[in-house]
Length: 134
Length: 176
Image (cartoon, rainbow over all chains, first blue to last red; front, side, top):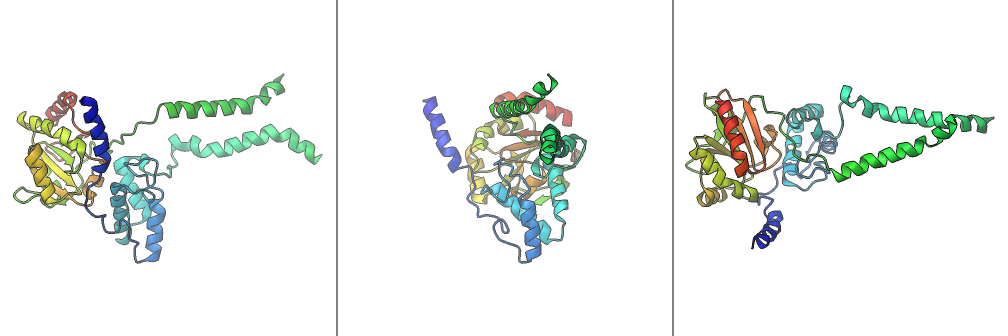
């Protein structure tokens, strides 16, 4: 009986995981100003969906992602800079919410890694490179 | 000798990389994203009543000297049903509870509290999840304890379960 109930709950949960309210205005509607829309779109692609964590809010169909897109468009349309909107979200959800990691001591290895790895690769290959030229 | 060891360096780097990836795949990162607003004043908001006959909720009314538990819920949220009896129990233990109904309709909220209990003094309607986002909440249900000065003191993510009651009562006492 308990297993049956759990099976029913699993069936029911996805169906009831969304409200039946329509999407917020500006969730799926572009801003009339093309420059503002481009700014908003670029930011949306760098913000992480809170409930579908592998996706950006630009890619996600989740309702909360739709509400986040509406929020981004409303703030950009009201004259805010994309970075202000990003900072507003980071204040609430931490750096996690942004796909663009900030440059700060804890992320220095992340930014330095490509340069270091390229340097290490070059160093490993140094003899072959020299020999070929010679 | 040194050259021979160096030859295996790329392989070792590869093994370390594969090991790190395999370890992370086997032990996925924590999925809950706690709000960074804990310890900060409630952001300014004013929500209209979610149902007729019960007041809405505004940030200004939260700094009235008495702590509150703010439950972020929705009538369409299945875990909220499981949590409902525990909220009623918290109210019986003296916890003052307000609510924010996310993306909801008055009829649906009224039917939900008629069926699952009504521990809420006030219910604000948040049709576009704006206040939910302002609070740093990433889903329903969630509960915040706000102290009498309007500062968020504690966040509980997901449905409140019987095991959570002692923690919530302790945080509630600390917020008084």
